[in-house]
Image (tube, rainbow, N blue to C red; front, side, top):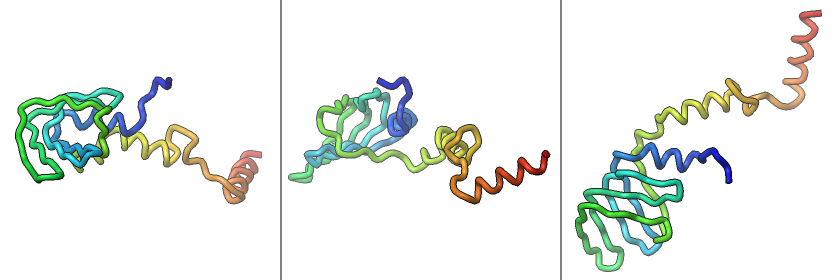
Length: 121
């Protein structure tokens, strides 16, 4: 198993303390403040509003633990997390500052490399 976490799991950790919406495969919606989460997407929420799909029933819970085995379909997190520091680091890597992900490819980059070598001869 890899020691590094993927971006979705890091984003899940960043959403702790924020209001999230979780939809299960059964169509049930849970909206509440995330207290904590785990790598396998088990989450603990508080001040939850539950909405059932079938009868459009609503209920409120104070504290709830959700397990990923319950069939999480998707999770809506706050929009403000798009400015999280982990995305700044990812942008820098893509642009070529710190890794080889942003290195140019093709004939033009090879020509530029030859020209820069000729300048020093």
